[in-house]
Length: 258
Image (cartoon, rainbow, N blue to C red; front, side):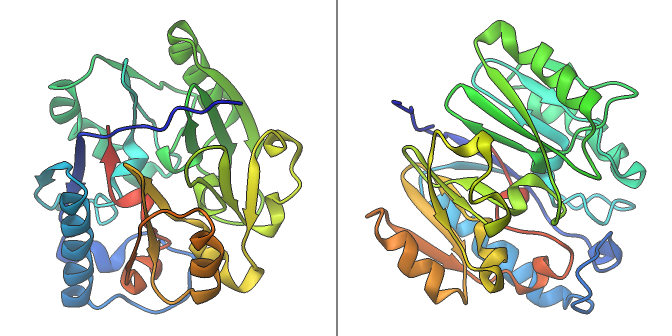
């Protein structure tokens, strides 16, 4: 199986606002420190720029504390962008604030009621898309995504998500034919066509590692996973994401890459 690796030119990010401390979370890790959150977000943006991306930096969006998790509001592909309908009602207004931004670069289609879809549940590997069916994404949302993308040659596989907020909390593409997965997905039949690096349960958060233009960006503090990824012979950037983690956030959800 030959897999084409994406080459991204742009990334969209949004500044966390002061109300980011009061967003949705199930992590039970305490309230983020706002100044440290801003520092960690700035380091993330700097890492994207270091990889040659033109970073489109949006201002904080008052009233939407989770809006800096921009990945959830759209799925951006070379041919088209799909505006999502987030599963959390509190986040649906964020989509409207992305229309003009993404519309400069792509034609747009939208997920509509009764479908729900979060970008964090959508993993694109070449022309195949895995869609996690989670508390935030339902089967109708996955169906609408498939209908929108099949004319461009994409195939879609819905995959139920057990633990974790999103599918990409547990499964991510780390280049070539390799996925980084938690133990829950180690032997999942939908993933058997890929090579899999399985992280230990205590390192599950590090499964949310971001692959950009040949480089891996992973959360700091997971030496065992770093050693596992070293076998891929890819450059690796580690970033502290402690404050995003308190809000169920990880590296993939902080940007829209295209």
